[in-house]
Length: 126
Image (cartoon, rainbow, N blue to C red; front, side, top):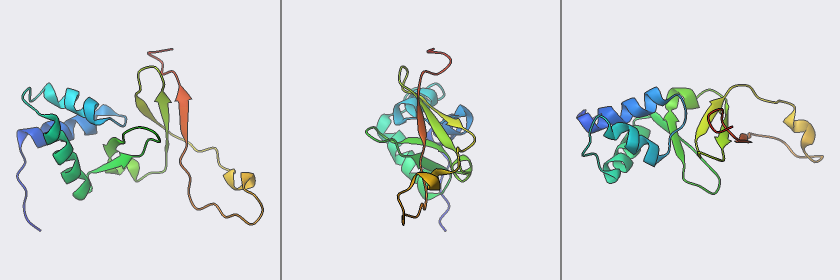
């Protein structure tokens, strides 16, 4: 494995994701990391996210009808769901799972996985 350089841009982007406590969009990552590196370009964010995904530090959170969000791979590795605020467009991790989803399936169907996103207003927007 080739050793990769740790740049101030990489560190700012990694820190933004690891400290956010919720999945971030590319624009949110850019805004947070730009506090530490004001000259940071959006293309650098995209490139760095790809690198962090390849290095299995960051995982994408698919968002139907919108761009993916990104969270630490350690968070993504544990089963959890998300809350989407329709006002500020932020995503939040939520713990717990309703369970019993297999009961909703038609006869003969087998559940292999599920994604659950709750929508509404976050505390700040309520």
